[in-house]
Amino acid sequence: MPTKSDIEYQIKELKMDYMNLQGDIEKLESTGHNDQVSKAEQRLANMEAKLAELNKQLAEL
Image (tube, rainbow, N blue to C red):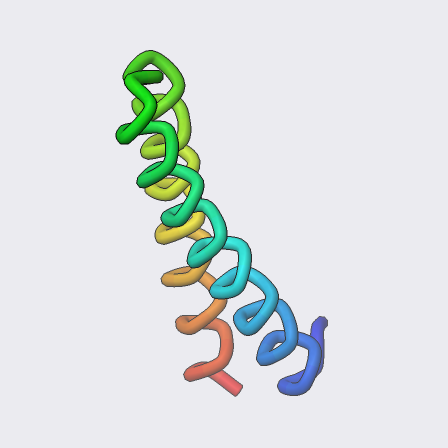
């Protein structure tokens, strides 16, 4: 069972990755790499689901 600090660290790390990926998507869109944009957007959706799961775990502690 992960500790509260473990979960909080995972959330912070995931949020940083999320923000970086958003920036990458903007760059891809501006350079016309739309095929890669959809893959990156799917990764964002997966990150959102993981964040929701981690926040739920945190609330249950």
